Amino acid sequence: MSKPIPACPVEMTLQLIGDKWKILILRDLLTGTKRFGQLKKSVTGITQKVLTSNLRAMEDAGLLTREVFAEVPPRVEYTLTDTGYSLKPILDSMYSWGENYKRNLDVQ
Image 1 (cartoon, rainbow, N blue to C red):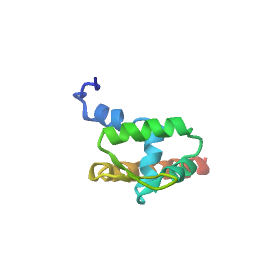
Image 2: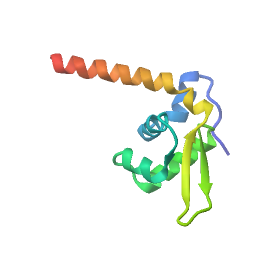
Image 3: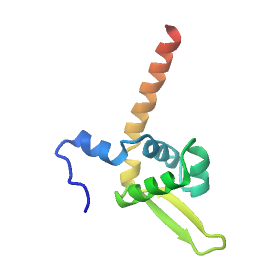
Image 4: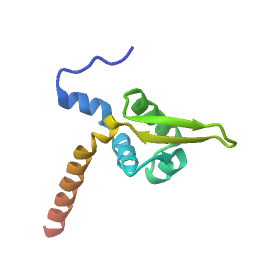
C-alpha cells in the first residue's frame, strides 16, 4: 500500500525528494542519462543497496526511467522524466542558497 498523498504541497515534495541521497541523484541526472556505476561514483558515500532502493523509489514516483540493455554484462541507464526535470528550479534555488550561506561563513 502506498503512502497517502499529503494535503500540504511542501510535505508532498519532501515525501518525494526529502532525503539527501535523492537530491544528489537528481543533481547528477539533471546533466543527462547516467549508468548505475556512474551514479555510485558521483554520489559520495552511498552504498549500492541504498542507491538501488532510492532509484527504485524515484522510478515508482515517476521521477526517472530505468532502461536495461540486453548485453553482457547488463547495462542499466537512468534518465529523468519531465516530472524529474521539473525539480530543477528547486535544486537551482538550493544551490544558490548554499553558495550564499558558504559565502557568509567565509566573511565571519
